[in-house]
Amino acid sequence: MVREAVERGVVFRRARIVSEPVSDYIRYEHGCTYQNIAAGEFVRWLPRREASDLALPGNDFWLFDGEIIMWNHFTGDGGSAGPELDERPAVAKLCATAFDSVWNRATPHEEYRV
Image 1 (cartoon, rainbow, N blue to C red):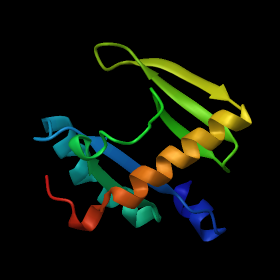
Image 2: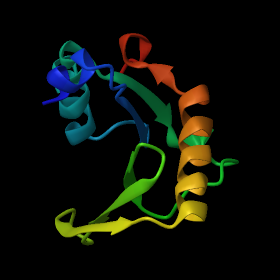
Image 3: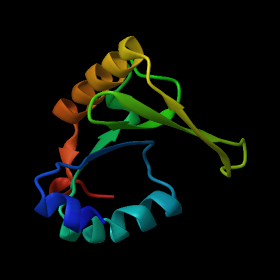
């Protein structure tokens, strides 16, 4: 799906904020990211300690076309509590600004070492 969308001109940027030292899961996720890159995504990593002065939304999210947010809610043990769509323009702007702040500070996947 990503590859087809990229071929149509859609840009996929993924930023991951991670605690260091990274967990085994993040090491695994980093190791599998070559698949995202091969499909055409751009991926960057930001150590959590470098995000302390950034204003970030309280939940993980996907932002579509700068207008629709899909919040990803998780349980305390890491399971999914289900997504939630949000179309409030002011919140979409907050998410876009936060993402750009992380993106500009983060390290490209090819350069980030776990």
